[in-house]
Length: 378
Ligand SMILES: Nc1ncnc2c1ncn2[C@@H]1O[C@H](COP(=O)(O)OP(=O)(O)O)[C@@H](O)[C@H]1O
Ligand SMILES: [Mg+2]
Image 1: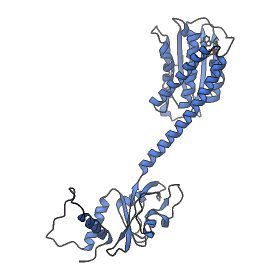
Image 2: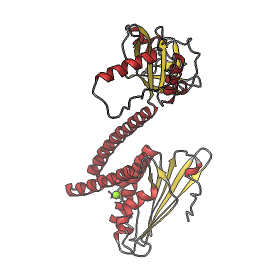
Image 3: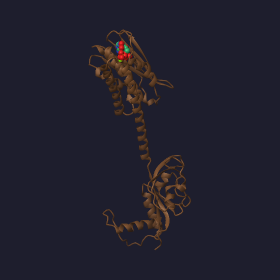
Image 4: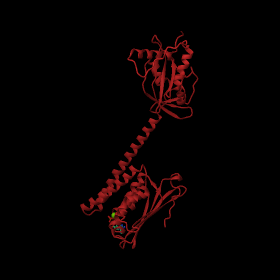
């Protein structure tokens, strides 16, 4: 019988060691066939057919590191079908180490396994395909030996970890966003506390206002956690105003299209709406039965700009006059909104009720988000 190929001899060695161990329920021994045993060429063909059927990228080299075989999954991973016996160490066009630096072929995991004559487990790297795409992998090269223990080559399996990398990337993005939000939230709480302390006349007043403001902030954050990274403007209004809707005819009217707001816009506008609502409850339309609030909003799209415009109109409440003092609510509209989200608000203290007009620049998005969102601003 002719000498077996090294793949096969390695396989036989593994099977032989298995035979020493206890019998396995899930291994059925090949029955002795009456047909003559297949020749070496046929056996190699069968091994290659077997390896080709595997979904993992597998290739072999000789003892000098020249690629002697690769399966279809390896060719797909490399995006390349190198000529056998010519390319050294790996069929990858180019390789990258985990830090993104070029990884020379003679320093690849396969080269390490052969040069040091030891199996290498789970080294990470990436293949840069000829078409420019990149596939991250873990490599498991194992040296192969003949019956006398001489190194005859090596087999390597590359495990594509693209999906794992994408999940890791997504996670670190979320952690960064979380850090960002926590930092902003703490700064906001600090600012709210300072301003509330300045405008409150008693400790009791300070406590009540602070609890309500932080409660409002928490509700906005809950909306952000529940509904994903954006919150709709309508939900922010409902968040504050729903509690005042006593069921009397037209007490609260909200009219406008669906507008998705990023976390920063949501937090700033959430605070503004909270202040407007509190003022309405303290001094305006929500302070007496029959008072009404009408909020309407629209989006305008120009070539380079997208803008949210909203009107807050109070009516049927107490008679209003120009205030003598300005507190936290006014400061928020006059300084915080322009500073944080470049929004401009004007407050008109009309006799029949306060009217606020606010213009908020939005980031440009593709039209699908804003299609048929025009509303009747009345
Ligand atoms: N919706 C409203 N209706 C009537 N008056 C209002 C309304 N909102 C605010 N004001 C007047 O404007 C003043 C300034 O409001 P604001 O800056 O929020 O400070 P504060 O609420 O601490 O008094 C209020 O004291 C009140 O006199
Ligand atoms: Mg106020």
